Structures are given as C-alpha cells and as structure tokens.
Length: 348
Ligand code: GDP
Image: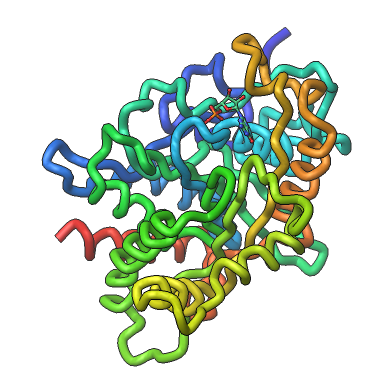
C-alpha cells in the first residue's frame, strides 16, 4: 500500500525533526544567549511556529512556565501536554489517534513528553516553545492557537543572574499566563526576583506603543503554582484558597520594611491578574523510586485530583485567554510582530 501524500505542511518537517519523531513534538529554542550574554533570537524558528498558515490568524494563547530545577516542572508540563494532546487538534496533526475524552489515559501509561531536561539543549537557558501548536475553534467562531512555553534557567547556578532575569522578564512579557513554579511557600527573594525580571521587561513596553497610554498594566496573568503545599489546615488545595493565601502574602502592612511594601505594590500594579494554586505533594512513590516512569497510578489521589482541576482551569476550552496587548487580543501573526519589536529593544 502506498502512502497518500498530504497537502498540509508539517511544522516539524520545516524545523528538521526526523520523521520518526513526528508523532510527538519537541522543544524549539526561540531565544537564547551568545557567549558574551547578549540575547539571540531565532527568528526562523519563531516564524515557522507563529506564521504557519494554520495558526497565523488564530488568537494566540501563550502559557509559559518558569521555576527552579528539580521542582517537578517537567513532570507537570508533560501532564499539560497529555491534556493538550487529548483535547485538541494539533498543528502536527499526526496525533489524532491520541485524542481522548479521558485525558489522563490509562493508569499505567508511562509519561512521555518532552522531558525538557533530557534534551540536547539541557545546558542552555532560554525561551523554548513546544513545536506542536494546539488548535481550538470555539462555538462563537473564535479560533485559538495554544502555545506551551518553557522558560529555562531560573535559579540555575550555571546561569548568570542577569541572564535568568532576562529570560524571566521576556517570558512574562510574551505570555498570556506565566506560571511561577515554586516549592512550599512564597519567599521574599522570589518576589524580589519577580520584581527585577518584570522591571527589566517593562522597558520594552514603555519603549513601544505604550508611550502616552496610561492605566494599562504591562503584564497579563501570573500564577504562583505552589508545589508540596503543606498548610492545609489554614489553606486547602486549589485555586480558591490559593487566592486567599496569595492575598495574605501580598498584603501591605504599615510596619513592613519599605522594600517589602514596594515589591508588593509593584506586583499588584504590574499584572492584570495574579493567581495562586496550591498543589499537594505527589506522594512518596513519585519522589523515591528512581525508576518511576511518571504513570499516574503512583500519584497520590489528592495530587491527581488537583492536577486535573489545574489543567482544566489552565487549558479547558472555555477558559482559554488570548494574549492581550493594550487590550487587544493578538493573533499569532500580531504576536510575532510584537515579539520582534520587543526583542529588538533588548538586542540593541
Ligand atoms: P524539573 O527539573 O523542575 O523539571 O523537575 P522534574 O519534573 O524533572 O522532577 C524532578 C523530580 O521531582 C522527579 O523525580 C519527579 O518525579 C519529582 N516530582 C515531580 N513532581 C513533584 C512535586 O510536585 N513535588 C515533589 N516533591 N517532587 C516532584
């Protein structure tokens, strides 16, 4: 039997991914650093992703994640991918057979995905897009393209602080939602880090169209994703109590040192919305077994339930929020133009 050639351009082909890997995407670096720490942008890759004929006129939903190493970032991202592949058509379109109402699949399915950490780009920091873009046509006619973005290198001792801050800032700038993956509780230095990063990136906004426009927040949505949450007596898992916890942390008190007050005011005034989600510990089988393959049967029931709530909130069809700049929802093409103009400011 002969294979029928398809008309459709396969984005993976255009970025030289071997045929054997076409059933699943891979991480594509779009922004990195030169040896002397200057930003370098791979516009070719960016163009292939955002200006692909299938996606360029769709509203861009850009969900980005950042956080320290060995804190379960890849693990949860692979589950995000599992949800996305189960629920949406993807640009690569080879994964139709994976679409499934029961997104978690079978309890013993090993977790496949990008394991961003095991790629050849492990030692680079940068902004990395997942090569598969997920497509959703809403009932009201709106068409979306969903991008999953990893911003690598935070708190990584190999990477200079300035680089980390740039990555964090620029990743936040281009995302409709930035997820800050943290362990245990929110710490003061993490808030300061966030302030430095957004302060750096804010420059691009003011340099651009923002001139003269008042009252518009520079960044869109931020989610503090708290892993291994313990204090369930006071704040239960999930989004609602997460919000209460966050408001507690961000509360400005008269007797606080000036710097702590400032960082709080800064965060509240920079983002359109800040959220917090409290995740349970995944269970000892997940963290102790060196051979653990990521299957969900080994997760604690609490973790599994909250993971399910989290992905539905993040990526559920009715929850999708496009990237907005100056109150305009951006198509992928427009986002490409913005990214170009933002990055140029920093490449000077
Ligand atoms: P990354 O470096 O942040 O991407 O971390 P990984 O996702 O590779 O996970 C590092 C280790 O933490 C693995 O052994 C995971 O099984 C484990 N892990 C995954 N999720 C969690 C979590 O929520 N809490 C804890 N304590 N460990 C986790």
